[in-house]
Image (tube, rainbow, N blue to C red):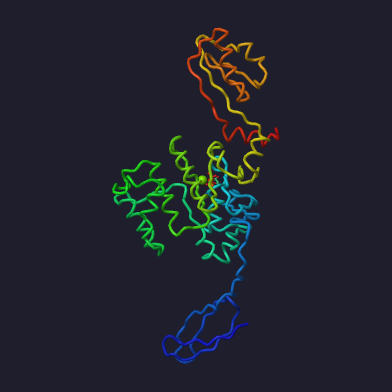
Length: 355
Ligand SMILES: Nc1ncnc2c1ncn2[C@@H]1O[C@H](COP(=O)(O)OP(=O)(O)O)[C@@H](O)[C@H]1O
Ligand SMILES: [Mg+2]
């Protein structure tokens, strides 16, 4: 029980009240009968020692929307200095998890820490550590990139002096005088990266930073993610495309229907998933027939023929042999494409336990 003396806002009479931390009491002034409310301060939250090893720690996180468990008892940790890929198809629960990490939505249960700070008990401290790029980023169209960054600095109380160099760092210096409304989707995303770099956070959380971008822009954004990481930051980014996280992430977590179904290094994941790209070869007059020479070739896992197209799943070192053999056998090849394995292929493998 805490005792507190408060002043009546009307007649200034001192009133002594008793209550528990965080309790709200209705008070009536004995002298002038004025009614008022008083809330006792809450208990001081414990300041936890920041964790040395992990930038993000998620423990048994669950978030429900009515009957839907958008995130179902998810736990994973992101080491300091890591690039972490958070993979899952649309609707898997990536954005909901990310919003819970940032304290933007309240979880039903579970704990999240950023650099050792609990995001609820130490909300201000933990949020200061993070640069967050939301899924659908948009900026005012009638101002320049520099004005955009200056606007965010004013909003957050940061120094504007480094904004020009931020624009240079993300590679938008040639567009510094253009209005953001004239930017391509990829350029807007680069401006988003510059914006999250304001304040030099130690942890970046980027929600589908490559979604909807063509291959050239995916490459550019991946380079920027590497740049942030090389500057010493931890990066978690989400994606629904396996190839976007390959060769860049140290670790990957896969979420499906709110549940974490795999968490591993990319090389381990690839090893046990054994997912190979498929060759798609267009051939004149194939007419849906699988050439026997290819079917029996060592290193070829699967061959399917559809009209004049051949789909071949094989080891990468067998690809050139497949093409040479087809040509030698007199097949006229019109076009060759490689189809990258999709995240769905990975899911099917994981769910079926086909490892
Ligand atoms: N505010 C909300 N209200 C109700 N359902 C939601 C809300 N936000 C997300 N969901 C649902 O939660 C599930 C996970 O969504 P989300 O986290 O956005 O997935 P992802 O980012 O992986 O595409 C989806 O089924 C989605 O429809
Ligand atoms: Mg999403």
